[in-house]
Length: 578
Image (cartoon, rainbow, N blue to C red; front, side, top):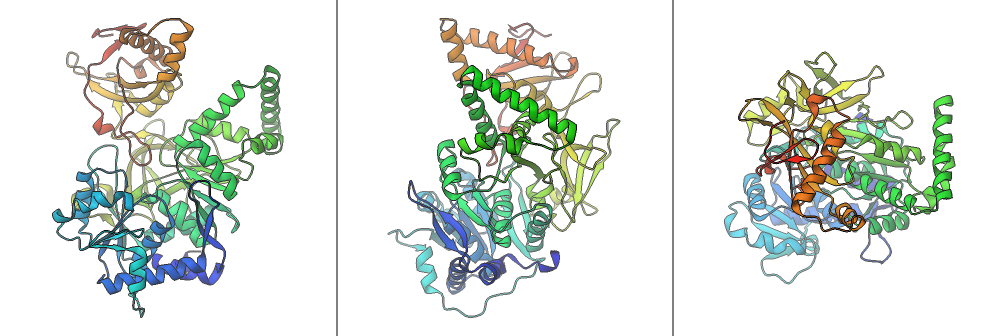
C-alpha cells in the first residue's frame, strides 16, 4: 500500500474521487441527529479554505495553530492548512495561558484557528506574540479583527496550490509529557501517511466502519489513527459529544459505531459499569453469567476458539454495544484484567503502543491473535529491537522505520539523545515472547533500583495497588532515604471517596484523617502481599485531589512531588522506618 502514499493535503481530493457522497465526518449537537459531511463536501470545503489561506498570505512552510475541541471544522482546518502548503501546530485546548503563549511563540505561528469558547484566551495573548498575524474563529463571531472560517472560505481566489513533498515538514506537535517540559516533535508527511498505511495493513477494516471520535484530534493518536486512517480508507468518523459515559453510549448507538480507539480510562469506566450492573442483578442471573463465562473459557482452552461472541451476544446488545467490531486501546498501559473482561464478552479488543515521535503507532495486536497484557506485534515496515536486555530479556524498546520523527524542533541536543544511528530510543522497557509479541515492562526514567540492585518497575506496583477499591489513583516513585542513602519505594495515593463513604456508613462512624490513613495503610500492606518483598511500598502519602494529567490521561509525574510520607507496617506508623 505504501506506493499509494500522498501528502496529507491531497487526501481530501482523493477521498472525494473514491468515495463521493459517502459520509466522511458526522457531528451532532445535544439530542439532535448526526449531521453528515460527505467526502465530496469535505474536499470542497478544504479547497475553499486553502484558497482563503493563500489569499490571506500563507506561504509554504508557515506554521498555523489549531486550538479547539473535536469537530468537523477542526478537521477541515487541519487539512486545508496542508492543502495550502502550511505546517499545522495542533494545540491542547486544556492548556493554560503560559503554555499557549509558549507554543504559539516558539512555533512562530502566523495564524491560529480557534473555537469561539477559547477565543478570549488567544486574544489576551495577541499583543505578546511576535509572529501571530491573524486569529481565525471556527464559527462566526462579531469580534473586530477576528477572521472566521466561513468568511475566509469566501475570500479565496482559487488557482494552483503549492506542492508539498512527502519528506517535508507537516506537523509540529508539542508533547504534554509526563516527565518534564514539553518538546516539539517534527513529523513529515511521509512519517504520518506511512503510519496510516501500515495501520491499514495490520487491521482488517471495512469501508462501512464507523469510528467514534473520542480521542482529542490535537494528539497524534487521535489525528493519525482515529481521523486520517478512516479518511484514507473511506470510513466515517462520528465525533463524540463528550466523555460522559451516557452520552458516549448514545453516540455509539445513534451512529452505529463499529470501531472505538481510546485510552485505558474509557475502557476501565465501561468495565466498571458492567461490573456494577452485574452486581445489581439477582443471584441467579449472576450465577448464570459466571457459568456462561466458565463454559466459554473451557471451550477456548480445549479448541483454541473463543465462543464468547455467540454466547454473550444478548449481553452486548442490551449494553448497546452490539455494533462494535473493534475496541482499540493505546496511549497508556491497560490493566490486563480489563482487556480480558472485554474479550470474555466476545469483543475483539486490541492494544497498541507508540509515541508522538513515531507518528504514533509502533505495535498493535492483530485480530484473532491478541493477548490482554501484550502491546502486540510491530507494524508492517517498522523494525523493533530491545537494546541492552537484562537476564530476563527486558531492554529498552528502540524502533526505526518511515514513521520515525524528523527530530525535535529547535532542540538538536534532545534529538541526538532520542535518535541514534536511525533508531528511536523510546525510554520504555519491554520484553518479547517466542511468538514475536511485545510487552511493556516500565520506563527507564521511572525505574527504581533497590538496595540489592533489583529493578522495580513502578507501573507493576501501581497496578497492584489499584486493585484496592479504596484507591482511585496512585503514583509509585523511588525516593532516596536520607538516613540509609538508598532508594526506596514510596506511593502517592488519591483515595476513593465514594468507597470511603460506603465504609463509614457500614461501620456507622465518621472517618477522621487518621482513620483514613490507617485504612489506606492496611490496604497498601494487603495489596503488597502479592509482590516480592523488595517491590513493596515502604511509605505513602495521600492526595486530596486527582493527579494532574496529560491529554491521554497519563499522570504528569514531574508535577507530583512534596508532602510528608507515612510508613506502612500493618497500618500506619507516622514517620517510622520499616
